[in-house]
Every structure is written in C-alpha cells, then in structure tokens.
Length: 217
Image (cartoon, rainbow, N blue to C red; front, side, top):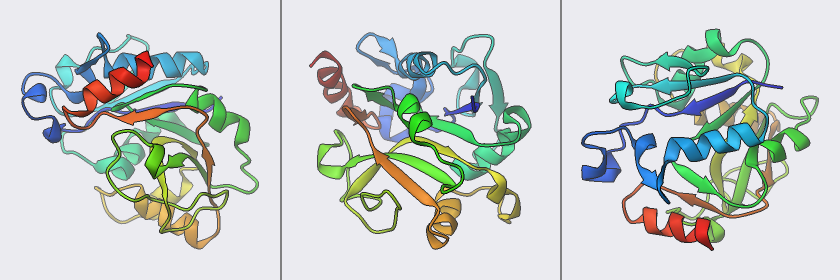
C-alpha cells in the first residue's frame, strides 16, 4: 500500500474571515472539519502511513497522533511540499489528497489503487467533467484520458497516485506539481480516470452550502 500525502498547508485566503483563526482544513462542512472528511477517505481506503504538510496556523490543525507532519516554514506549493515530505513518505509511488473538498460515491483512493499500472503510468489522476464538478471554476484541466493531455474539459479533483522520482531534478524549491505533470504528458505517461460519484471544491465560503447539499443529497 503506498503512503498518502494530505495537502493541508495552504493559507486559505479565498475563505476570508473563516480562516482568520484556523487553517482551512479545520473549516466545518456538515458539522465536521474538512480534514476529518479527508481522513474518512483515507481510513476507508485502508491507508496505514499518512503524512500531512502544515504551514498556516499549524498548531490549530487537529490530526490523529499517528499522522506524520511535514511542516513548511515557507510555503513550498504542491510539488515542493511533496518533495520536502519524501523522507517521511519513503521511496516508491505516493498517493496525494487535497483536504479542501468533499466526495460522494466510490472512495477516490480505492478507485486509483484499482486502476494503477506502474508499467504504463507515471501518475494517475482522478477527474470529472468540469460541468459536473461542483464549485469548480474553469473549463477544465485535462482531456478525458486515459492518457492525459492539455487542454481538456475534465477537472482534476485533487486525488492521485504518482511516482516521485522526477521531483529530484526540478531546480526550484517552490513549485507546482504541474511542472512534473507536464513532463509526464510529454512522455505520454500521465493518465486519468473518471470519479464514480460527486465532488465539491470547498475553496470559497459560498462553496460550503454546495458541499453540504452534495453530502446530504
């Protein structure tokens, strides 16, 4: 079972006053913090080794004691943050999950594990058509797959499994995982599958009632 990286270090500036006294993963949705919704997914998929990165108001992020912390004194973005956490995650493929979304339907991590083929893939991303991705703003990130290219009309949902070898030779300390994905696209090694269920991005205050409606629907 690959380890899981929870991205939990963002400033949450789009949340306005809601993040004045707490990090974004502690914002409640349907009566529970966002981080707890992410942990439910991890538990449901049988994750046994979990690392979370932290930055803003890190002391107020409530996590189980068995989760390792990769604290970032400076925000490193997704790529830099994942690379900094590799000593805790170990060698081999890693799963990542954003903590600012809610999901319905099949467990996203279980879906990725079932479809993962390291002989053909360097990364496998979970997607939805942009028009079906609640709270998503944009026309799409990638094609429908299975081999991904840009542009496209499918939204990346913040869950993936990927090989981390390529992180070592990226010369920046702060960088997005898009840098690594673009290299994988050039090699024809970035793959995607469609999520079997619903999803809502919870990046803005107005997304909270949308997420709660999705969960209660």
